Image (cartoon, rainbow, N blue to C red):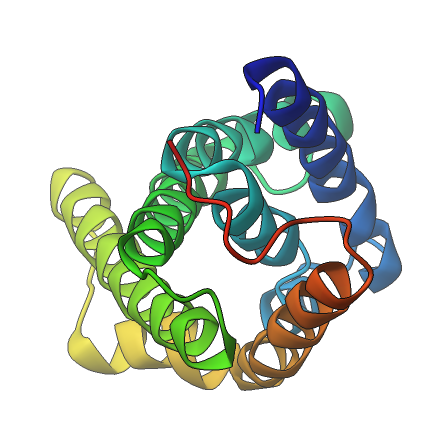
Length: 180
């Protein structure tokens, strides 16, 4: 895939990352449940490669905070930037390592990205709360990063593979195309 094509698609994923949270009505609690910014970043990493996924993951929360004041710049957009950058980088890197681009490679890449992204979120939030002398525990991490996001996690596990398979079957992306 040519770099101009990847850059154009990345801009599309950035726009989706800015727009999709409006589905939640700008209600932070619903946004934390459905995780609407995650989907475009994950797709960007899969389709455009780890570098683009990392960049779009890093930029999206900050830009959304500046433009729409949601999520709050600190600590949420800051922590989410690291989390989403990790999602985009890990899913793109993992997926590029698979010779066969199929449902298994999509799921394995997606699951690894989800685990690494949530760990990154936990580490960043632990650092932030330590610097601010605020409490942070494993229970707080589990609630914020996993339990409250279960609906969004389920949506990602269903939607991302379905979208990728659709894109392969329609020829919009080539299943044998490596991510150089």
